[in-house]
Length: 215
Ligand SMILES: Nc1ncnc2c1ncn2[C@@H]1O[C@H](COP(=O)(O)OP(=O)(O)O)[C@@H](O)[C@H]1O
Ligand SMILES: [Mg+2]
Image (cartoon, rainbow, N blue to C red):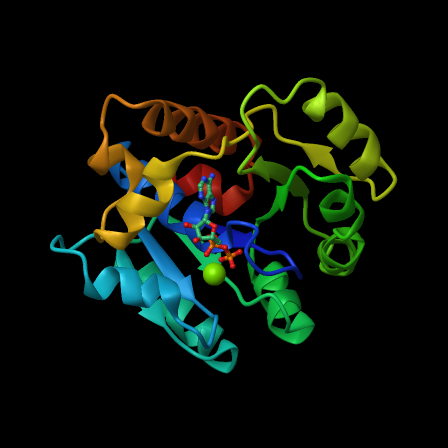
């Protein structure tokens, strides 16, 4: 079972959007996926309430119950777990990072946003987990953003995922409808870039002994 913590100490960067889209991408790739919603605002769980389908499983729990929830997921045959988190609790974010194999830090592309990832980067470092920045909600025709972002986050010892997610209405519309962009607009660009992001994620997942056993 792979556990991916989606962290950023800033609100509105795309933690919930990426958690849900990556979980649906995992399901579409044939892996049993679940989202554990550690944000007291429970927006991932709210999405699940408005979703007609059974999968992915989304559970909303306090961080103190994370070990038990992961055990239930493991016994239930989950293969990919995404931990969606709140922006302002470093304690919960650290618990998520410690439980995870890999940390994803969604970040909007502005220089102020990029500079603000230091706190989140430190949490991943304390937990000693590999962490990658995923640029989200990039404006159209943004040139050189990836290169600038790489430079800005390198000081924190982080890498930027080669797949950047654009600002697209399909992401917001889909979630409102209890869907993800892959379902809302299957042939759209959002669906395509999310499939690419998922393929990248599979590549960078650490090949832990357990992961190899369950692959
Ligand atoms: N790539 C994107 N394109 C368009 N809207 C986005 C994108 N990513 C996030 N949003 C919107 O930005 C807002 C914040 O995203 P959300 O995933 O809830 O962030 P967080 O969970 O980090 O607070 C939501 O309204 C969401 O629909
Ligand atoms: Mg959220």
